[in-house]
Length: 294
Image 1 (cartoon, helix red, strand yellow):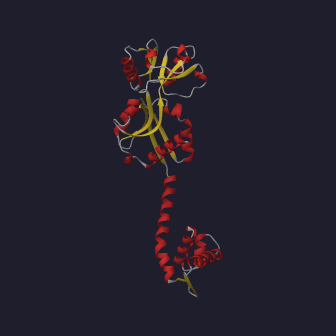
Image 2 (cartoon, rainbow, N blue to C red; image 1 turned 135 degrees about the vertical axis):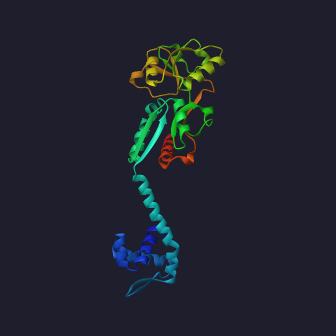
Image 3 (cartoon, rainbow, N blue to C red; image 1 turned 90 degrees about the vertical axis):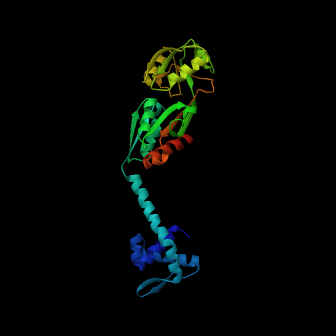
């Protein structure tokens, strides 16, 4: 028994006229009559009494109508709600840590817009700490952040998107660029180029340097990740970061894995309470989560 046949049966029952029901269903009366005959054959009973006054339900037909009419009406309501949801104008605002969307997810944003053209995406470029503050301001706020993996969940609920082991971004002429991997202690004589104190990287660098017994030589700080990559590309120092796609502008850079087990960062959506997020925000999170599984 196909749902389409049940839908046709309910419509025919309500109109009590095959011709009017067929017109409402945008099919021919002959096609509707044939469908009802097939349904009666399948069920092994008569569903209609055909009279001069129209089609009247038999007892079996009335039972079938009572069971299936609410289901068909619920289907119509659900279909209308989904259509309204997908066509209504929506706005999604996401506070974004430096480089995440720009470096790692540009195609994902484009693909989301193609799938949901009625959704407007507003990306707020913020530092790591500012993203956290933004999320804590309102239960409906959404942020995307990169921070040490073991920190997630300390201040906010989260949905994990991607996990990376931090790497050393270094100029090709630096001897470390030839290494298969380094430990943080190998960097004691290097100049560090870092994101500013509004990110979590300086804290991690200081903590790891202290663990190895040295004070890091911080040559330059900036909130501009593109500027930091440019300086590293000019061999002005080394950069600790998650792997980012390199363009022709940064063709002299090399990535070297850092061996230390606690140098793992994760990218995650942050929010106060998932249930308090709007449907557009939940749809965006789910889209990004599934995209990362592909």
